[in-house]
Image 1 (cartoon, rainbow, N blue to C red):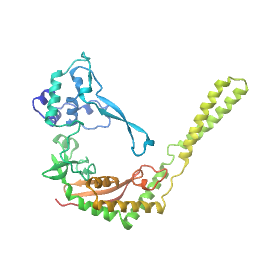
Image 2 (image 1 turned 180 degrees about the vertical axis):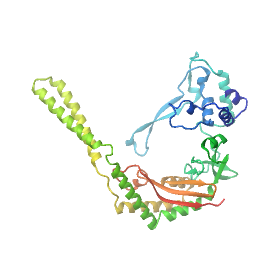
Image 3 (image 1 turned 90 degrees about the horizontal axis):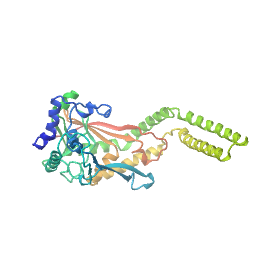
Length: 373
C-alpha cells in the first residue's frame, strides 16, 4: 500500500484494488473490535489511517493524541467539562530510539508517504479536507440519500452549491443497490420548497394539531416506560435494608462494640440510604401531560423562528433549520425530497420546561416535495 501510494496511485484506487483482490478489510478481519461496522469493502478512510500510522516503521510512537478538558456549554459552566481527544502535530510525537517490533516499511518510505499526502492537499492542518467555499451550506448534515441511506455531503461545482453522495462499485454490489458513482442535488432547488413546507406545516391549526398528537404520543410512551426496569422497587428495598443495618449497628454499640468502628458503619449505611431516597424521589414522579399553554408556547416559538428564516443570514438560517429538527431524504428517480420536522423532548420542548421527559423523536410534519432541476 505504501509503495503504490508513493509511486502515484490514489487512496481510493488502492482501496478498490484491495477489495477486488479479496483482501479482508480491517473491520471484517477483527469483528470483536469493530462490532458496529458491517462493511466488507475497503474504504478510503481505512487506507488513509494505515498510511498515516507510524508504527509500521517498527518503532513505538507516543504523544500522538492528547486529551483536552473542554466546557460542555460555555454559557453554562455549571454543566462542567468533558474530555475531547485531539491529534498532536507530528513535530510533537515522541519516537522510540530502537525498533520495538519487526518493521513493515522503512522510516524513509513512511516520510515519503506523509510528504505525498501533504503535497496532494488531501488534508489540512486540522486533519480534515480543506473547504473550498466560505458560503455556508444551508442543509449541511440534514439530507440523506434515498438510495443508500447515507448523509449527502456539501460540494461546490461551477459556482453553485450541491449535495453529493458517492458510492463505489464495490459498495453498491455489497449492499445490492443501484447507485450511480456520484449523485448530485443542487441547493437552490430546495430552498423555496422547504421554506413553503415549513410555513404551511408549522403555523396555524396544522401545527397545533400536530403538536397535540406528539404530546399525546410522548405521554403514552413515557407512561409505558415509567419504571419499566423495576428501579422503584429496588430503591425501596435498598432503603429498607439500610434501615435494618443501622438498627443492628446501634444494637451492637449498646452491647459494647467499638464506637469508632460502628460509627463508620452507620455513616456509610446512612449515606447509601440518603442517596437511594433522593433517587427514589426523582424516579417516583409520574410523567406529566403537557398543558394547552405549554403547547401554545411551543407553537409561538416556531412562529418566531419561521419569521426569522425569511431575512436571516445564511449561517443563522442553517442553524435554524437544524434547530427545528429539519430532515430530508432525496429520491433521485421521481426528483422529490421527503421533508420532515422531527422533534425531540431535549430540543423542541426545551422552549417550555418539562420534567421527566424522555428523549423521544417524533415527526410533527412530513411531506414529499417535488423539486426542479
